[in-house]
Image (cartoon, rainbow over all chains, first blue to last red; front, side, top):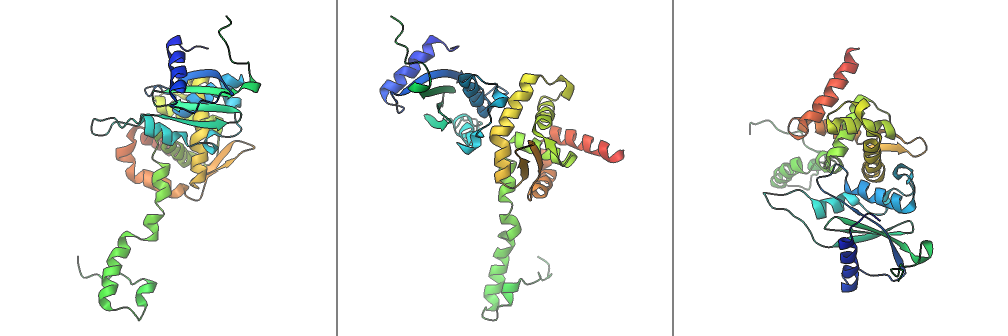
Length: 129
Length: 158
C-alpha cells in the first residue's frame, strides 16, 4: 500500500459517516490518486489500480473493457471537468461500480479505492495487535 | 433571400397542405434535416481530444493495430517522435483507448474493432467525423491536424 496514513484514515471515516455504502464483506485492496494535470486519464488510473490489485500487467487486464461497466470519460468530465468562464464545475461525491470481483470507488477528490469481497483476499487487518 | 425557390420535398407535394403551411414548414425543414440529426454521433465522437486524434489516424491509414495506434497518439499528444515513446506511456494510452475511447467510438459506429486481432478500421460514420474535423480543424486541433496532414500529404506524394 503506497497511500499515506492520512488518507486511509480519511477513507475509513467516510465509510463510517455513511457517505458511501460500507459493505462489511468488502476488504480494502489498494488505492490510487487521479491528478487532473496528469497525462494519465481517469480510465487509465483506474485500470492501473485494478491491475495492481489483481497483480497483473495493466495491458493484460482486458475483460471486460471498463466502458462496458461505466462510462468513465463522462465521470471524468463531471468530477474533474474544465473550467468554464473561470469557474470550475467540480461536483462532489463519489461513484462506485463493480469490475469483475472488485468494488471500485472514485471520489471527487481524485482518490480511487479498490476493494474486493473478503473471501477473495486477506481477512480485514485488525492492526495485528 | 433572393427569389431562388428551394426544390420542394416529397411531403410538400401533399395536396392537403395550404401554401402558407408549406412555406412555414419548408423553412423549419432546413434546420431539422436528416443530415443535421445524423451529426449527433459526430459531435460526441469528437468531444474528447484523444478521440479526435484517433479519428485523424484513419485519414492516414484505414487499419491500425491498437498497439501502433497507442504509439502514434502518444507521439502526437506529446509532440515527439514515435521512437521516443516510453513503454509506460504507450501502455497508458493503450489502456485509455482499450477501456474507454475505442468502445465508445464503436458504439457511435465511427470505427469497427476486431477483438481477436485488436485491429481498428473505419466504421459507417467515419467519413462524417473526418469531414467535420476537416471543417473544424483550424480552430480545434491545429497542431494535430498539421501532424496528420503532413503525414497524409507525405503518403500522397510518394
